[in-house]
Amino acid sequence: MRKLSNIGMRLALGFLICFLAGTASGQPTAEEATQLLEAKQYDAAIASFTALIDGGAADIKPLYFNRGLAYYYTQQYDSATADFERSMITDGPCAHCNDVQYMTALILEEKGNLEGSLLLLKQIQNDVPDYKDVDKRIKKHEASVFISKYWYYMIAMALLTFIVIALLSSVLSSKRG
Image 1: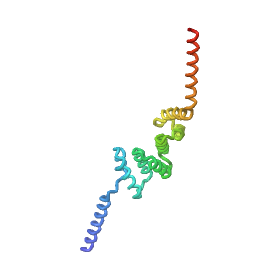
Image 2: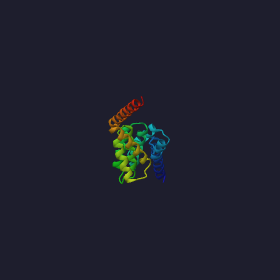
Image 3: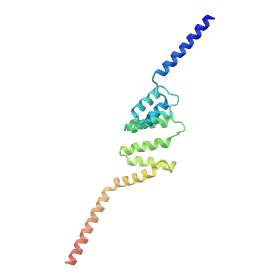
Image 4: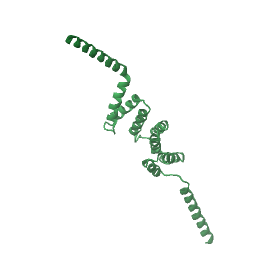
């Protein structure tokens, strides 16, 4: 009987040590990492999501997307884009494909690629017509893309208008005089 209790005590002690070592290892949970993201502690959130991804977390699907958000808010656009792409690959039925496309469109906008951003926004609009502020962004991008493509025509038209007004003014003033 006495040996059985020693074995039981050793098992209990071993379990307790393993449990304490696991909780003291500093491994964050997905909830803690998400709370850091929501609290706008982006660098800490990036570190937490990275630890979870590297540690082989069971549900890796949202981790890449959330770390991509943290990268986006710290203006690390290349890392954000890479994580959003990984999110699309690991996210089986693509639970948040529109979110990934939207964030990628915002990154393209930040990088000055308004045409690429516009294409993604129009794709989102086709899939989900009332998604966030897509309509407003599309209108803004269409105007900006139009201006960037045809600025020289606009300048030529303005100069032509100025010349016509000057000529008309000259003609009208000479008839009075």
